[in-house]
Image (cartoon, rainbow, N blue to C red; front, side):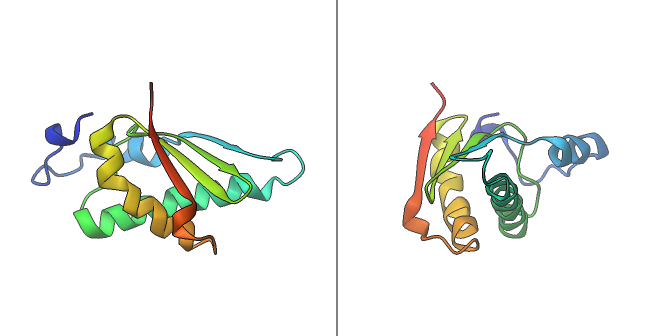
Length: 113
């Protein structure tokens, strides 16, 4: 979904809300086998970014615009669907990462190739 195709005036339907609640990007972490709480942390970061987006924009984050999250030694890598979504959503993920006690500067964003 392109950012330009997303409209604030459209309400979330029941099916749209269900899909948004079920979708999770690919989540990976360095040493996730030894420290499974890293995966839980990434899930909390994604949920926090979703909540921030909902509070600011007044609707749910569209599914599949965030493709993947990766925690590598305290650095969060977020992969987005396209550059427009990256620019728009990166601040939400910086704040979500800070909520986990990590510096917002430790967020790296990329676009899926």
